[in-house]
Length: 424
Image (cartoon, rainbow, N blue to C red; front, top):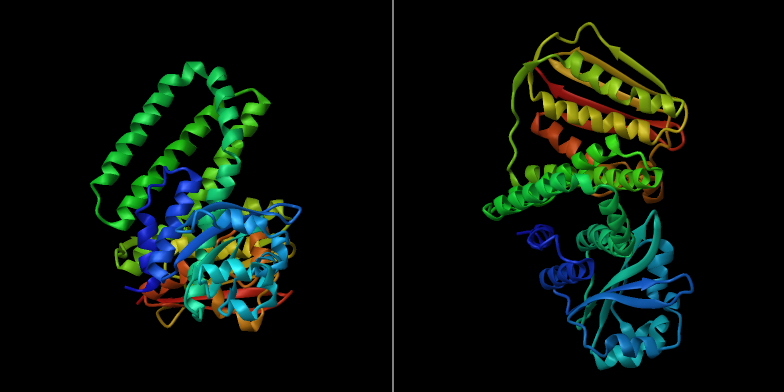
């Protein structure tokens, strides 16, 4: 089994109800065991450059104390480089790296030869690293770096949730006092959640378990939040509920993307063919993003050639998902100008082109946008909110349909994504 699948499978078995520090420790455990590291730690850096251990795996108890005795800013170490550049840093010859001079004695005593620093992000800014230690000199492959970068998102989410726990508890108490009449509904929600969790325990496959443990409860929480918002009048409470709803929507989008990708990768995926109108699907997607584009001042253009058949046979839901992902990216990364969708039918093949006047993508980075959790410009993607799954899933779905997806782009002048798939 590939390393990535082993890591993801191990993490999927961790109880998501654990406290953030406990959850982070378990994730470090999975990474170290599957990738062969001896120790692991998460180091948070404050505004003055001081580091503190948030969680660790297998580290000697004295390690944090001995590290803090070194009166040198953490940012002067390779950890600082990882935080500054936002890239993973690897040192596999501790004694030869002058930046680690103040820590040589400690690292030598622990017989550590290799350290990997992976930056952690919140709102596009690095706030610490998670570190992996090995008593062997080892080179880190590009594939392994990709795995470690993907894990950064899990740690960042856990740490951010830890920072807001006290605030959430306080808001929860306020809500409980203000919505006492809704306790019955909250009890029903708890029972529904417990029922979903109990049902999830009977499932022995990763995808089904993830669906019950994450997606179903999250939908319930979001639905109940909408109910509370309809009746709530207090501005402060409404602001809190809106934060919960927006966070839930973002997390649900992430979960759905990971589940879709996992289903495709593990083969638990089939296309459901029905007769449907391609014109209606395209128009529906176009209208879905029309308001969002108008709010940004963008012009939306749609052209469906008369050659497109009125009725075709295929997977309507998955095709709509692909077109929606492409249009969403076009609107998201275009700040002015237009987004244009053109569809025609030639030689028994449907061709859909979505072009925009957005930020564009450099030549050397075009292939990477179809890779999991990969974007051409990490800073721009964080500014527009994204995790790099939409185009990956779209590419794999189109391949399942026997088609292809391609990208043409000029930095600063926009991009054109072309979908081609056969419909005899």
